[in-house]
Amino acid sequence: MYSPTYADLKAYLQKELDLEDETFITPDEMKSYFNEAVDMIEAAIHNIYEDYFLTNTSLSFVNGQAAYTLPSDIYAQKIRKILYNDGGAYKYEIKRVKKLEETMFIQTPDLYSYVLTNDATAGLKITLFPTPQADAPYGTIWYIRNAKRFTVDADVCDIPEFTNVLVQFVRWKCLNKEGHPDTMQALEDLGRMKQEMVDTLTARVPDEDNFVLKDMSFYRDFDDWRFGGGQY
Image 1 (cartoon, rainbow, N blue to C red):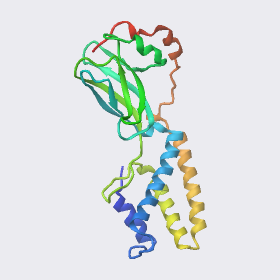
Image 2: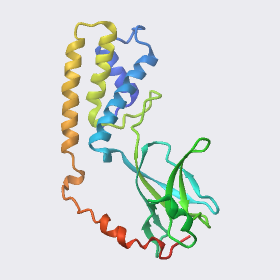
Image 3: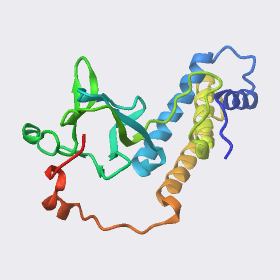
């Protein structure tokens, strides 16, 4: 799939609107318009089909360290799963602590659990219980990320399916600033494109598989093996 750069998108729109030699819309303004468009599209995706931005990163445990920084591009602390896999016998989900008082009773060698904390100095952290007692690169965080913003010309658009919506938003912003007579038509076209985007996202199913597994977590809560032995 073709993924244009910011330079590609900007050059296309400037040529179409005859803005190549214009100074009325500054480079910073143009970039802010494009990033506003990214924000708008990102919000729609997160509201309807947030798995579009599902990704993962490794979590390496450090001996004696309980708190770990969240991924820098995580969206609204949306962690899907934290998985532990030592390559041997221990493969399990590191679950979030449901009741903070439980942390008083978690000790080595219990299986890991975590709490999200937001310290005024350290910021957002994943705090593990019990504290790791060895260096172990066995964690994987699955999470929902932010869409990438444009900062330099070489930045690639990472929502390529909806570049038409993105460009239309910027087209409308440029026409609106110039007081162009086609401003209202551009806004109407943007509304139509946004609705088409919403319809596309609503109908989208990963791998064309619409089978939904029954949620059995309610029953598993009564048989939580978390404290029955664990792994450093």
